Length: 85
Image (cartoon, rainbow, N blue to C red):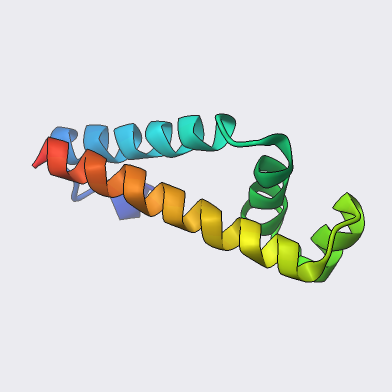
């Protein structure tokens, strides 16, 4: 990991940390079911079928949550990128 960040300036690293903080805050503000889907899919690398069993919802609902989450995060991060440029 150290090699990955070694070429970054202090500003680039701060910007990266700000994006991560913004993403985490966006996820914290999501509805509980959507937040669980995000955590299970992206952090715990579970498949949609596994998540649907955990939450007792359909695979399509899990996929819909994932699509909505990505849309929300892209929008919030693109707004952040416009502000910091």
